[in-house]
Image (cartoon, rainbow, N blue to C red; front, side, top):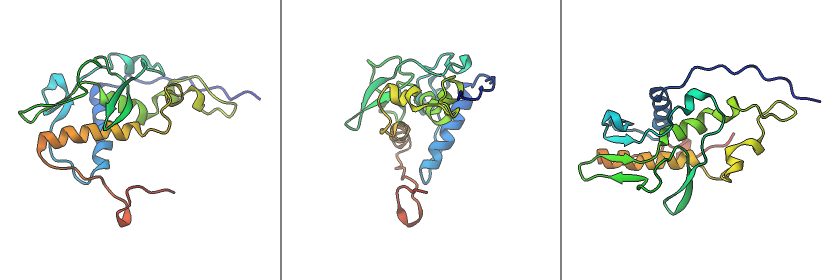
Length: 181
């Protein structure tokens, strides 16, 4: 039995501003309070500057970006999409209280959180679902790595440096760090 045909995908390009707003909304949900600080792409000169490296990827509606680099973060090798300059430090904490992230963590987090690959890929199993075997998580072997959590930890470190205030993760009832349903 063949999978049902997919509807034609037609979506407007997703701007850098939209990706930034989407990811920062989720970032702020992960912490109890996030102090007011400008977080944005380097051309805007924010306190926490993110390198814009996605190019026109989110205008082309292709399911897969270039292969991620592997960067060390807190003793672990993390896949980082949209990382065009892996020879630079991933995170620079500058003496004037600014921070520079030398990979496009915003676009990388947006890609994974939004389900971009599932939406734009034509790959489907016989039930019409996007198959794990076609995913970047399978292709680059990081299905058990909470990649976006690591991206948020990098952003948290940058925000803490820029504001001088610690960010505490949001907890569930009873102080639990996670919940299952």
